[in-house]
Length: 262
Image (cartoon, rainbow, N blue to C red; front, side, top):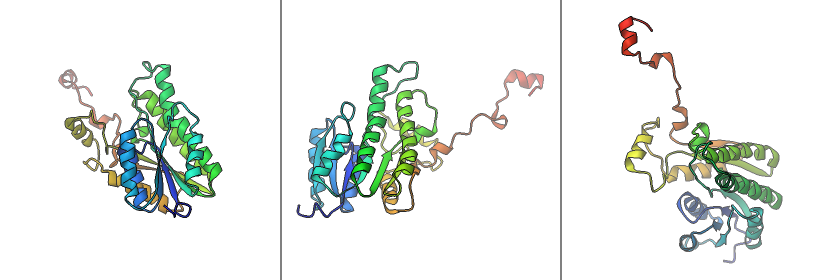
């Protein structure tokens, strides 16, 4: 395409499938050339690129293992092809379940390498390479909880949330940095319908979210130029539905009732 040097470009990590693909497609529809990062999903990435190019913009593929390489190199590679890079969406994620007691070094390393160290390196190189732009970090509404069954994953995402705020201060005013914390929108393929309905019962809005809700959040963060350092929870209020224990909900045991005690 001849307009690559003039059109703004966006780098989306983990963009061959699922949410990353949705973000990349939405940015293409908004007129961005796309740097589509993927790791192993070769066929999906090629299909996604063909779809994006059909929208009248360029799409370059960038295979890169964020867990084993200096992720900052990825931004440099992108800028060689797309010098008008303006947006970085850190969407690639590693997800592994284990309690603190069961978390081994290998799992801890992988979770932090992909979910924290890579976004940090990408963000640093992005800031040092562009005149102005936007960084959006994709988090998880679980950062509001203390679910130790996902210890390494949550620690890495909580760290990324803190990085979002720190970078927003350091990178201003040239680069705005924000985050999106999705709730129940795209559960893993192993999650049953019964599980999803069970999760919905804990959501004040009583429904599962849609990908369009997250795309709308991304668009808002890109378009509102007076917003930085914000983490936008798109979860139907699920993070708010944690009441804790309290006296009014205490169920008195039968023995206590019989003794007339409280």
